[in-house]
Length: 309
Image (cartoon, rainbow, N blue to C red):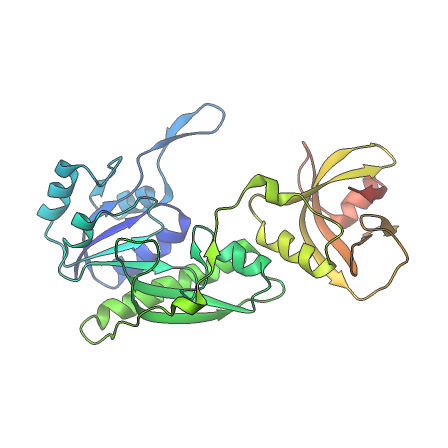
């Protein structure tokens, strides 16, 4: 099909590649303008722009799609459909109505569950055991359009936000190619309003661990916030009294200790077990402020942790 692609982060790159490999005529790639990045605040292209240039595709980077000249430029491309994947801009009705088949969005949840900005992380932190992707016919409201196609995916106990992101990116690429191949045959399904949940944007404040919660809840938080913003807590050891320790991975263990939440109940070479409000947590990978991430074996060789707060 003759299509426009709109996306910005890594999650979108695999979809762009899949559409290109499937032989679709990608007549324009819309992505966010280059932004300052790093300590030097150097203008840096996003992953989608880099991939589009690698594929010799025409790139457009408007600050807004509400500008009439921008809308006219998009309309002149005469696309049959616009595929939108984590673009980062609201599409006005003028854009939604421009292509023959409208605008299709890939959303990383089974709508109407987890509408919003952080569906992957919210699914993990809530203890969901299944998620997926939905190919949605976009309308003027956020994530409320009819569903054209869905693909499901189990959430494993070992999944982090990154690993689940990677699995859903592959599903999304497969799903949109399948949807475009069958665009005339797909039957739109209205979302069930009774099942709505919202996936609000992540905040750094949420990264702080509350040790009074259960080991299961804390582990879900750790997995959901890896790689960003990373769960963290104040720690005490034989070499420091109060430093921030980021916890990148852990596992729940079936051992009972008579200890207060946050107390380190077992500490040896390669082992750090912490009491919680319900159950215990074995830390696997940590990162002390200002240091590189380390597995718990290396960390326990250097420090003896005693308590978290």
